[in-house]
Length: 398
Image 1 (cartoon, rainbow, N blue to C red):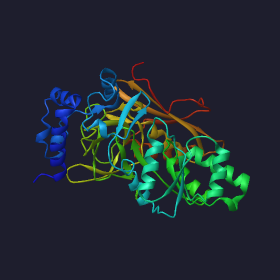
Image 2: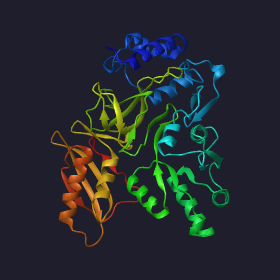
Image 3: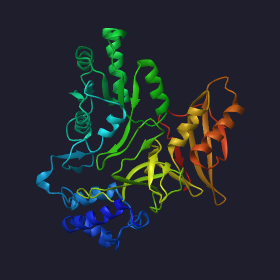
Image 4: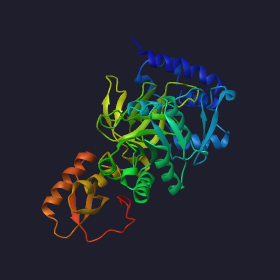
C-alpha cells in the first residue's frame, strides 16, 4: 500500500507541472512521470537538481526559472539570496517551519527574543521573526551590527533569548557583561547559526560560560526548515520534508552512517523543490524502512569540498574531527595522492611541544577512520602549517 505522503507528492507535483513549465521540462528531460510516484524508490528515479542548476534556469527565465506553481499574487515576499537566487515566500505562517524549533526549545509568550539576523533581501531575519511570533514570542528586530545599542536593548527590555550567529552572540554577551556587569545578563536561550569546526564543543562552552541553553536548526533559503534540534543527536526532519542522503555524483542513496549530499523534496508543490540537492553534506542517523531519512548529523561541509578516496567521499570535517580528538594538536591537513594506481591519504598534524606522538598518531588514525569511514595511510607530524592551509588537499592529478 502506498504511503499517503507519496500520493500527495504525486498529485501535487503533477498539477504543479501544468503551471510551472520549468518543472515540466525537468520531468520531460528525465522521462519521469511524477503522477506515478507511490514510494521513495520511484521518487528517487528523478535525477537530483543542484542549486547551481536552479541559478542557471533563473538567469534564463527570471525570476523563478519556470518553477513557481503557486499563484504569484499570493506571494508575501520574494527573497534574494547570493547568486542571486530568487525564492518565493508561499502563503502560510510559521517561518517556513522554523516555529518547530522554537516549540522544541520551549519558547512561550513570556519570552522576549532579540533577532539579530538580517531583515533585508535574505530570508533569515524575517523567517526567524515569523516563527517566533507563531509561538507567541515577542520579537525585537535587531538585525545586524550596532553591538553597543543591542547590548543596551538586552538589558533594558529584559531579553530572554537571542537569535544570532555564534560570533555575534559572543560579542553581545561580552559587551553586556563588560558594560553592565554579570548580574545584568539575563538571557537563558540562544538560537545559534551553525559553524564548521568544533561546533558542539563550542556550544557547550557557551552554555557553561553564559548560563544559556543553545539550539540550532538546519534551514536553507530555497526550502525553509529542513531539520531542527529536539534534544536528541543532530537534526530531526519535519513531516513535510522527504530527506535523503545521496552520492553527490550519482544521486543514489548512501548507506546509513555514510556522508553524502542532503537531498530534499518539499511535500508542498507550490514552490516545487523535488529531489533538490542542497550542496551541504551530512550522514543519516535514523531512517525509515523505505530509506527516508528522519534524523541527520550536524552539517559536515559543502559537497564541492569533498575528495573521493578509494570510492569514499572524504570531507574537510573529518580533519577537523582529528584535530579536536587529538590532545595537543593545533592544526591538521590531509593530502590525497594517487600512487601505484591506489588513492593514498596522509594526515599531517601540528602538535604542541611535549605532546605524546605515539598516542597522538593512534588517536588521529582512529578519529579519522570513525569520521571518514576509511583508514588514513599514515599520520605524519609537521612543525607548522600556513594559517590559511586547506584542510583537505587533492593532489591525485599531479
